[in-house]
Image (tube, rainbow over all chains, first blue to last red):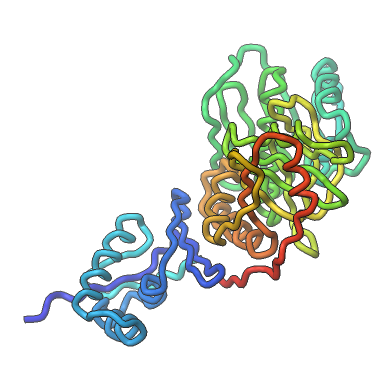
Length: 102
Length: 277
């Protein structure tokens, strides 16, 4: 039986900006900053609340980057958990309403 | 009893603010402290000062919070409210110049945040018609840079730089907010040619900084006190825009006057940094 899908959405309490090809994300509640690499940026940009993380990894990560699918999924789950802990991403086992960052 | 209000208009960063008080001695203190920044311009904003005798001097952190349309600014030695819509505010405080500077800095930081500018923990100076900013944590060398400035350099501030957007980029203005130098800057402005983050070292050297590191350092050194998500986001957008339009470098310097030769000769090969939201 497949595991429960993970859905991710960007929090509305963040500001994101790409500068010189790098994505910077700031939690505006506490002004903490994160710089995302290319893989993390691909996941972050695909976090629409209704595409399961596994699909995002398959379509946006494995398609574009030379990575092992199992490793990519494990890394993505770790990355999502970390950003969720900082209030950047919302995570659920149910589809989420899309929150557009400002 | 009718108390006559007296007004001094203080213009910092091209933003004239009327400072009103009914206390003659306090008005004198205002005029002395902001001599060089007194203006005959029509004020854009007004702050009314009510003196109190009982508030103790304070090292408390300032709190700036929003209540409806008003900003509340509180510290042990003063209590102010500021309404950006009516462009007026009121300050209750002791006749202490540090309280006065603090309130003015906070009000300017709020005005600037809405206008795409900022106050920066940085010394700044004009050299050959170009403004240079020197930022860093306390002890990094802001005041030292200004002390080492050779003749012909116009000092804008040794502590708090005033930065506003302009059609061609950003401009830096002189401020009366001084640090260890205890000397107000000149009341003039120039286009910002570069921002240097200072680090003391064994030699004078200009080094590169990545755009993301520049944004991170810039945000860390911008003076901003308000607990307000919308304004913090605006400030982030402004910091990214500044980094995209102004060369930002690391300046390692050995404290001698030759560092100014590096600054004077600084000609970046800078085409701007692509950015998008």
